[in-house]
Length: 142
Image 1 (cartoon, helix red, strand yellow):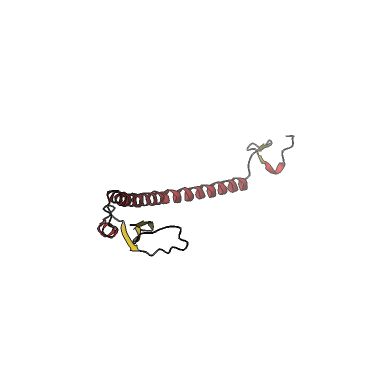
Image 2: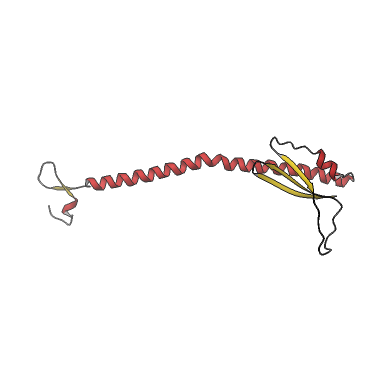
């Protein structure tokens, strides 16, 4: 047999009358090893993404629930301002959250006017709603 095929990459034919092109055993072993290694890496990566995927959805759901709670409180706050019946301390102490795991904390805070750029009423409350590791805060004033 003539040609430019390297003799090291030819395997003797079963009938012994020449050489047929093919792969050596070491080439097959290396190819299978690399292929299996890549397959294992793919399975591990996609498996981890699959098992952790609900965490992102849970975090988003928690943050959305906190946002809805704060929107409810802000809506009630605005309606009482428009009606002229706002008593901030009674609004905060009487507010109950509708979310099962949402906790409401509030504290009266002092605001310093450093440049006479704004006017603040007598009471300023920092309201924080939290659930697990997530929280949202807002400031309310009378």
